[in-house]
Length: 607
Image 1 (cartoon, rainbow, N blue to C red):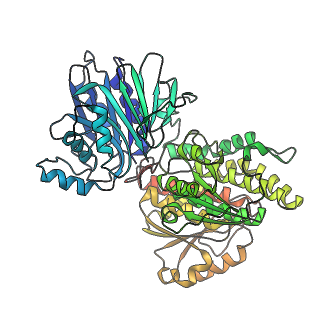
Image 2 (cartoon, one colour):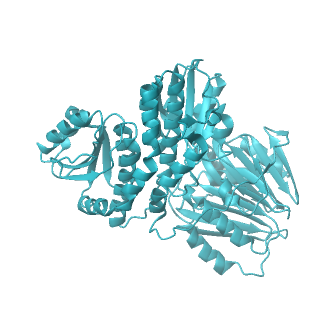
Image 3 (cartoon, rainbow, N blue to C red):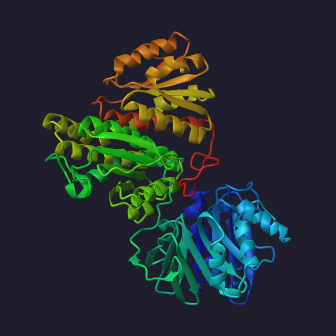
């Protein structure tokens, strides 16, 4: 939900490092941003700005001169959860006496009670955030020892946080804490130390990396540090930084989202290079380590948002190709069911970031009961990748901008290959296996055919951009694509959209159908084609407008977006791209901030 970045060192351009780090973390929140700088002489300077990191950068350039030297920096980019989007609610936060400063990613669930207790002691609050409560708790419980004070306060607050804390009492020190929210610690040979919510922000700065676990506290003092785990000093594994600097250019594309849509054919080719040899129709077994045991009779998929839609598609593939009973669960709801782990069930977690808070909580519950877990993530070293028993990386490349496109395609490519792998082991016919593999190998080229001419999609987007409400409809393999396309439209256009199985229209959505609600129907020439034609007739009988996405020429639709012909299992790759393009062009015509839609963040790391 937020991004935090910290630095301790003697670089004269440290303020530029901080701003650059925040720019790399801006996908985590862009309501406001701020930083605090300090040195050994108790000189602290707080700079905050509402809006994007660029607004903060402008203020920093004006307020920090080149001859000013600071050794400690903490910074934050915010997606608002507690309190409005104001400078007072922007991090870093401090106590009423300005002795403790901190940046915080997370949510303190019992903040209201703690705040009332502090108000009763005559503490005054300048803002509305839960983070400011922590700062005042530190001042109220000060023991004279920085670490003891922090540990005392941590025992009072509940749920999720990653914190960077500095104090005027000990100006050469930083304490970092991780519980539930992601935080990394890194350094280089120049004795520069860094903290970050994301490894990408550290690229080019740090040589060594330490993944912090829940309960870890890092005390950075001078040129030395100590790490405690649940109160006990510990040694953590130190890893080499193996990541290059983030690609930050749109090249000739108007938006990053459009660039990432067009990257998808090559993303699929990259996955093929790692996982499949089409000349031999061979899947790399090592890539699916952990899925080789045939004892699992059922698979439960757990995810959120776009990843949940990918899961829903996989349930069809797993049941139809691998013959395995499969179901999918929304993580935030599944956590509160009476989960009873079965030894013959595999629990699979999918997440682009690998840091989705709700999914991580379910994962921990499953592991506590001894369940078998498998992770499918895009980020190496992420929490889900480290907590699951087995897993694979989707190798989709870095996707920073909020609306997921290529990460979704990387996910469904990986999970279809996994379904084929398991299907081959569990009796899928050679003819069917070969046919799917052959058609799958053509996907990058078929996608490029769609991307080569998007003028028609743009024209349709111009026509429908005047409407305020939409239905996205599909059946079988196309239902998850309808859901994902509806989500995309809502995310970046702010228009109201709902998705349904097309055959469910008669149960109640038909009550809303009229000339003012366009229906986007995913209707390739698959198992459900004729039934989808019947749905079109029902919509047209009520003066509804129908846009179809199909490889067939559907004469009774108002407009058809043509796609290449393939087989049922492969159509989702093609229809998903059309759904992405349609949402993108509507948003562009409406002049929305496509790469940074309002109120959203790329990685949801708080509950």
